[in-house]
Image 1 (cartoon, rainbow over the protein chains, first blue to last red):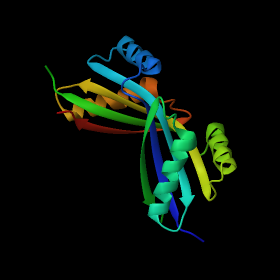
Image 2: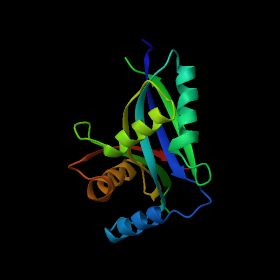
Image 3: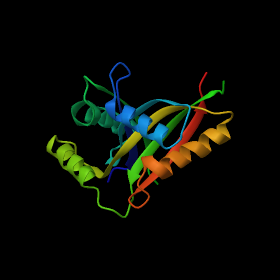
Image 4: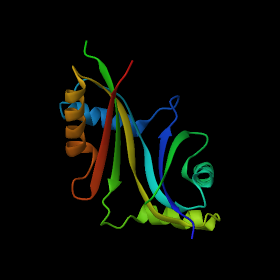
Length: 86
Length: 86
């Protein structure tokens, strides 16, 4: 059986695009009295476990999952982290 | 003017709860041919900037934002990171 890797993915709207959900959160924080807050952006966080022979293959496949399913290549950027599970 | 801190928040459904969105992603990955994938969970990622006198106050306020608005205390857990912006 291949070892397991814990993958964490963060998918965020691109900097150049408006983020209406982020703006809504920013207004709600202001209404709750939180001042000095700016640049709120809201995206997705995903965690999963991947059985692969080594961390290189785990990272390659995780990147491929982002490109094919998890992130929209036109509107979103993603970052990845992969670490072995005990 | 207070220094700025970059805050990253991750809000995830609690371990004990079903995560239908995570299950849907898991099935979709399988259908795309990604095998050996398990435990997919989908949550929210937020980034924002906070003007505060020091990192302690930035972290305290970011935690308070999570407790009051960003995370549902019954169904979600959150993690925070705070770092100074140049």
